[in-house]
Structures are given as C-alpha cells and as structure tokens.
Length: 406
Image (cartoon, rainbow, N blue to C red):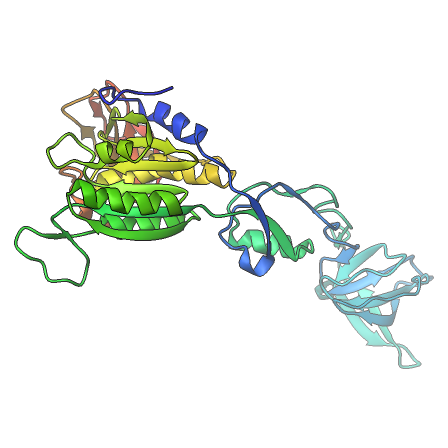
C-alpha cells in the first residue's frame, strides 16, 4: 500500500505500513548483567523447577511420623542452603528455617509461634505443638514452575525480568541488536541549548527529545545536528545519516512551504515514499519512506507533533526492528472534563493528566493551544484519542487513554 503526497492516510493504516517495512535485526548473546532494556530474541523456557526441591514456607519444625507421645524430639537444624540427610524417624523433628529443604519423611512444618520448647531428662530438646496448622507449610518442588515451562515471552527486559532469568540459571540471554536511529533537526531558526538566542531564534527541542525517545524505546541514537533550510546542506546530512543508520528521523521542513525541503531532498536521496500526510492531529504532514532497509520519517517541526508521532508510529517501527510488536499501554478511565473541537476530519490525540477521580483514575484534558505548545508535555501523562466525526467527549465518559509517561 502506498499513499500519494496528497492523500491523508488514516494513522492506523500508517501503523501497519511502518510495521510492514521494519527489518528485524540480528541476534546476539549478552551476559545477563548487560541485558537490561534489551529486546529478548526468543521465548525462553525455565531451566529448573521452581522451587528445585520441597522447601519450608515457615520458620518452625519439620516433623515426620508421630511417635508414641505428644512431644517431638529435636534431632537437628536445617538452615537455608543446607540439608538434613537422614530419614526422619517417628517422633523426630528438626528445627527448620524458611526456604530450607525439608528432610525426607517430612509430613508438615509446624511454625515456631505454634510450639513450646522444653528439655527432656537427658537434656535433649523437645517440642510440643500448641495449635493446629491449616496446611503443611511446605512449598513443593515445581509448585511455582516446572522445568521446560515458558519462563519469559519476547519483550524488553525489565529489572524484574533479570531477576526471573537469574533465578532459573540464565547467565547469558539472546537479544536482538539495537537499531541505530539518526536524528536531524532542520530550521534556520534553531540553535542548540546553551547558546545565546538571537532575534527570531529558538532552541532546538526536537533533536534532544527524539534522541531521548529513541533511547527510551531501546534503540541507539545519534544526533546529526541542526541543518539550515538549504537543500544542499540537508542533502549532505541525509547522505551521511542514511549510510550509517537503520532509521533516520528528520524534524521540520515536511510541509508544503517554500523552505520545506525535506520531502524533495529525501526522494532525491533515493528514499521511496510510502506516505506523506496523515489524517491525524497533531502530525498531519508526516512523511515515511524506505531506502533499502533504512526507514525514514519526516516529522513536523512543532514539538508536540513530533512527540506524538514518535509515540504512535516511530516507536512501532523501532519495536518491530527488535522483533517485538508494540503494545501501547492503554488505561480505561473517566474524563475529568469535556473535550470539544472544531474540526472532526482527523483522528486526534489530546494531551491529558491522570488524577484521582470519584470512581477511580480520571484523565483531565490539559489546556492546549496547538502543537507548538511544548510546555503541555510537562504535565502530560496520557493521550486521549478522538475518532473521525467525534466533536465532543463529555465529562465522565469512559475513554481508553494511551499512557506516555513511565
């Protein structure tokens, strides 16, 4: 499917296109300590039973067959990491700690607070049970997971995933190589942070923001600097980025103005256009194309547009490059205030903040005066999606919001 420069493509169709053209990276193995934030290349099975032995769920006394009397002889101690080899004889018990393997012949573990200890005539320790247990307080081998069961599905590895893998004995894991994302900022008015602003100049926010978004999505990222509104300068920057990167993001210069050189420069550089223009707000003039395996996104210069386009489309492509399908974090909640708009000919993503509502979590639409209003993102937790033809969303309506803040 391709869209001409004059066709405004539905964002859901655009998503399918950017997924389709993603080239999945190679697989490499990394030490587990280096795998945080990387994309797991395959589903992994459990390497051991969890737990790998019958273990005590309590501090207390593991007992076997009853003896002739009501008391139990204490014949040993089992701490976590140790074991008691003999078979428990009738009337015998061992003091046991939480997580320690139960001895052979154990019937149950009596928790320590339900016991009373004393001494026999020969000085040996004996224990009486002072209350009945509701269970045996033993966690059986494989009760939590069996060897060969699925341990983890393909995903971006989080801190808890690292712990799960370590508990199963993984020292290394297969991950997909990270795509390199090149970022090019365009505009005569842009200067890098730290410089003095001349009259008519503004600081480049799209470049740093896109670099941060790419890295947060698990990719490598490289900034190719700020390029003025000049076709030759842009062509030189694009030539380098297209040669070195897997994905190139160009912010600004994608509309139809006299100084919007990006679409012409991309096509002149050999990029095959797949769409230019979305039925989406913000982000209408977005461009997407491919040059061989390299994906190119031309993003609007307005910073909110750039942010939303990355969340809705670019992140989808990055995840697919790493062998994953992006599953947006969607939260159903009520609207804390109504949203109304003038035009209904596009899908719109409206910034909102999460707050406690009467019936749970609510999304409060933020005061928003257009996609150049970058400051709104400082309060944005989520995006409320308005569909074609929707003019107003009433206060209290349940909507599915897209979370955009960790």
